[in-house]
Image (cartoon, rainbow, N blue to C red; front, side, top):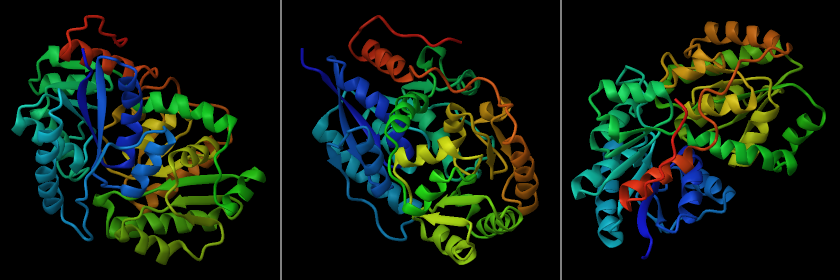
Amino acid sequence: MSAKPVFVLVGTRPEAIKMAPIILRLQQSGLLRPVICSTGQHKEMLNQALADFNIHPDINLTVMQEEQTLTGLAGRLLLRLEEMLSDVAPACILVQGDTTTAYAGAVSGFYTKIPVGHVEAGLRSGDMYAPYPEEFNRRAISLAATWHFAPTRGAANNLLQEGVAADRVLISGNTVVDALMYMRAVIRQTPPPLPPVIEDILRANAPYVLITAHRRENFGQGMEDICSAIESLAHLHPNCFFIYPVHLNPQVRKVVEQRLSNLPNVILTEPCGYRPFLRLLDNCLFVLSDSGGIQEESPSFGKRVLVMRDRTERPEGVEAGFCRLVGASKDNIITAAEELFVLSASTGLPGANPYGDGNAAERIVTQLEKNLIGKTEAATCPR
């Protein structure tokens, strides 16, 4: 019996990282085989992340345009995916998270009556406009999805409360932990190169704070306030560096470069590949970020994160003590950062990783084999 195709859709770097363990496990299945489709929503960063796992797309969609709208992107994706799904005729579609890519993949599966598996299902912030448009995307994907792979008990409960049948929900753990456990060992054994200025900082064992900020809801005044906070912290801590890999979005880069490029201890770099970024995360004091993924990645490295958002769909990191919501308020960021400068000098760290044990991909693929082939040895996640 030939292996059935599973259409694995990825568009952004976080999707690539979180889908990589599933793709690698599918390649070993014998019963299922991945057909990897890249939408190129984050083209350069996506390709970097996949290459770190020695994965290369089978299909590349050319749908990105400069200054595109969400409507335009979603429309082009739906049209191109209709063509690709007709050609591949997959047994199911796998989408991850909350991007426009994932949304379009789920809707395409619904329209074509192809089963959809949603990886990292059930996250909710409770506010349709924060994060925007991700909260809407997640809820819409849940309506279209056949199987829901929830990373935590809380995410599964969200789905059950919304009326999703229990036999369609699997608490798998988060595949980001699978990826991190593999990559952490790799980067510690063979450190990936970073820009010379950062290599000098690491060689000198100088303290630094890692920064990522790029979310749509922070565009405009939010980014101005975040940069103002970073500027103040840089003046308050002249012996500490602030390393900021700047997102490619021009609405982010313009503000960041205008506000922070002349500060001697603020290091602005191009976006890092996955391995170099994890090396930065592994060695930093703490993180300032509005990213969802960082909230999940930091516990595997024992790092605290100040989340520059008012709400999070990942409350487990907050509850475990790794993350703290501070919004984009300059005063809140500075006050919380000052507290972390003190905490980072102590030995006390939060407790266990709330996002899983590193076996999420195994559970997901085993469940897919059961659903699509009839294999009965479905792996279970501790609950």
